[in-house]
Image 1 (cartoon, helix red, strand yellow):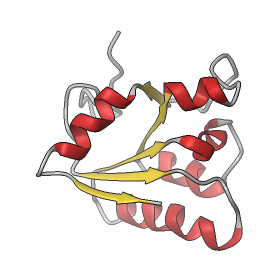
Image 2: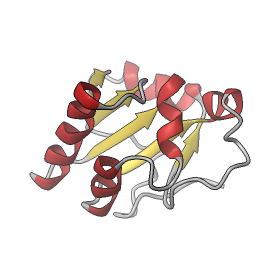
Image 3: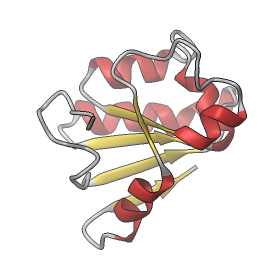
Image 4: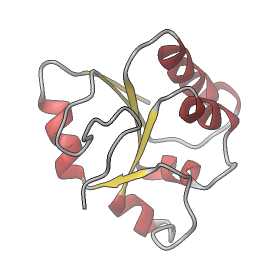
Length: 120
């Protein structure tokens, strides 16, 4: 089954214009990256924020207010299936609307010259 974005885009088969990769789950200065993601969607940018490595702990509902707002404002949130399994979150209750994808999908996004990628 293919996941659909809120705007109807098929995020597994389509390419986002802005791909933000969050590999950290810290607080404080680290949250600036997620606040920037919120700003992108508020200003009308089509953005997908991908959680990988330690960042997948943010896939738990209520774990980060900035991600709550990112999703509320129309940002698409995805997480790496392998990282979720490594952190024991593959069977946990995850954020609503979260897309769980493999790195093969993400590699396609990253290698597309039309995609702007920011990695944190």
